[in-house]
Length: 91
Image 1 (tube, rainbow, N blue to C red):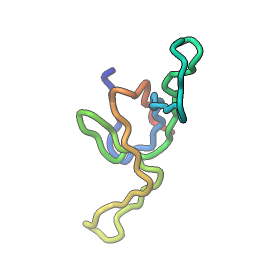
Image 2 (image 1 turned 60 degrees about the vertical axis):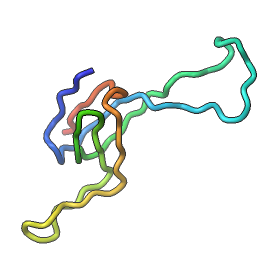
Image 3 (image 1 turned 120 degrees about the vertical axis):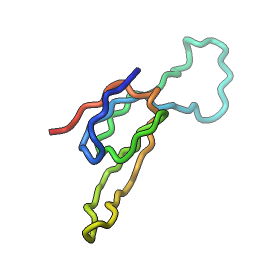
Image 4 (image 1 turned 90 degrees about the vertical axis):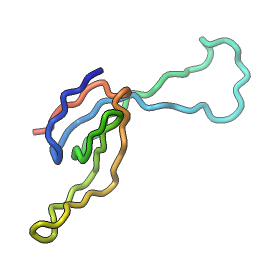
């Protein structure tokens, strides 16, 4: 899915599929008896970076401490673009 993304440093809501693991040993050969599906996740954050394969969303953002300095971010999450269902700017 091709996403149209807002500019960097924009607050947004990302709905995406995350992988899921099945802990422990699993012996069933019947696909119907095992609940295996990716989980739908909603992430709220600041768009920090974009590349062809992923976006980078941070939970916190800091303006530059000095004029001409770099802004900072905290708790960044890389979300693969192929997993993204929707991107919405937050008001």
